[in-house]
Length: 240
Image (cartoon, rainbow, N blue to C red):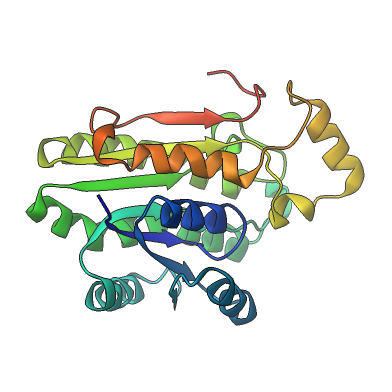
């Protein structure tokens, strides 16, 4: 049945594919973005999906933003926490600002968004939460101690919230994508990207739509027996 779905980082890359995939499933989708007004406006013009701008690292802003969405669209029953950033540096050169900006955005947003959404889900006896982790949160990566720590934290957060929420009809799962055709990966130096692709058994980058298809499956009404899982989508690069 159609439900109200919120996707953070929802106007570009993986988030865009997830938001449009949920729309195609018949859901009422809201896409959250932080700073790129031009991309958000273009996304809305292209898809018709309403966009809402706030910083998911800000606890109060998340409360206000979700309240706005619920006033406009109705109770949030599907939440996809996709927003994420990188501030790469080797640890001996990483600044405190680089560390905390990534932790607050990638991991702090999980608390901020879920804290304000899960109460209503518990009251209604239904909810679907999907948190986007990363292959680098599972295996680590040079120059990404902050990013890998945040994405590893997403997995532990997901399992804990799944345990707390299972008796209330709420499932909480994580998806850990490998390297996909997104702006973030496209910004990697060509010689580095070549090495990345060579390390993927299927010999290509993933497509955002491939990640989105798994997310749309996890949020369906009939996916209620899948919770606390971390689903790897990485072309065989890491087999847990």
